[in-house]
Image (cartoon, rainbow, N blue to C red; front, side, top):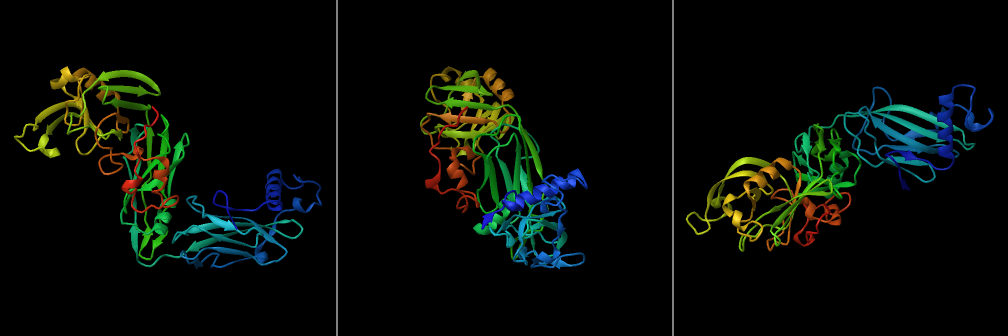
Length: 428
């Protein structure tokens, strides 16, 4: 058996020749052939293959077939064979399938959607190599009352930096790996320019998608769900979900070297600015690793009590901060710190944030956007978490990322601690 290409059952050898000639004959019109003399068997119009094939389900107008059963097509004539099968619904979704090497049988390998009309095209050839064809309608039945699994994609439509992961939030938990695979196959991501990417199960209800490397600059990225009507389990079928389109801007990456007390900003591969900074002092070291800009706040009140520092202690603070660029949900920012200008470029004196003078903070605030990348190296701090405190997705190697997919890895609720990356820097 072999997996079909482009979600269709394809033949080899004579089958492809027959199909190619058939298409050419149709294009050129009657009396003109593309494969030799008029009496050549491949120059004939395709014959009606109705008597040569059989289906395991009900087909035709007014009849329905069970969406929970695989579609199977069999070559009844021992002297003929199936060369190609496609099954497509009205929205253009193809049913994946597998064709036997000898052309005797084709069966679907992806679920049929309930309450859906499919157009099934079957190509055959007889013992003399003459092409046959059958086109018919197949309508699947409505499911019994069951729960609906919908998907909410994120972030909201807009333009983001090249580090922005896509998110998919499910309306119900999916724990079984086979069921996760059904969900994952139905979530499609198209990027222009094209990239290699994968989904990663963060937990039972949330997936993230990222490329192997960062997104290209000025890309258009579209994500949609084809789950509607598809059976996930006995109690759950896919429901309708809104697609999402986002775009990326310039490739902006800021690298903070905590040991050198300097932040360097790169734009589209070129260094555009170096800024003296201060990072976390001993006991409050800034996290190492790659972080994604979560948002920007022109003014923010920072209270030490929100990060576990007791009021009235020697380390407590209550500050009004300007030009604050957030990189973790726990309160790590790149921001203006006029009170530490004397230490910027020389010493680390903050409580974990990256501080700089007002002018540089205003410039940084205006330069970066949500989804841009801020990387910290050479800090004595802990490693940035892959999930739960912002977007630490890029701190997993590509192999570790793919391990969280139901199609390529174990996908059991995200990476275990021992699988997490050792914070390998990404190229700027």
